Image (cartoon, rainbow, N blue to C red; front, top):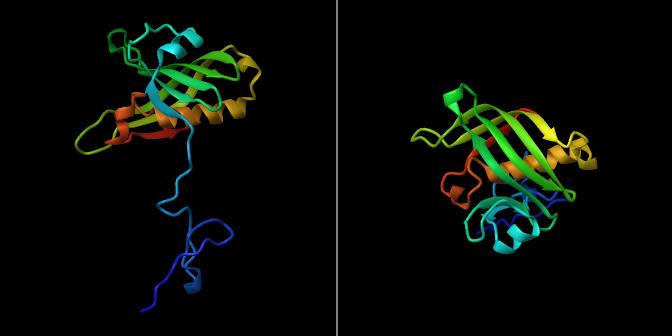
Length: 169
């Protein structure tokens, strides 16, 4: 009996090197670790960051503790006034709090046929305009990381039906 043991070639992907099978992309079991997590804001963090939540309120945020970065807010849907849904968030990065609004291209809630899906069209507004001195590409990259983890609601119960998050910017 011949037992094939995957080796890790120089590119880091597992493959049956002895038989010439090279992976086209990352293997199915490899994941890029993300430091952002959706969690309930602690009472200590409400005080530390002067958040507008009552202690013990059970509010969620998307946080990267190592980078001292967080995102909170959500998708506003106000059809009564004829407004299209938009994302409205507060993003703390680089020691500064930024007000961020995003336009949605698509928003699909959970259905029996499909996973929840959110397609972010563009960033329509960031204050302060100087991005608190942070490089625009760096800020956009980290904001996308946070929004991927935020998903549709920013709550931790999304693991059952993980939302699909797409960016057009």
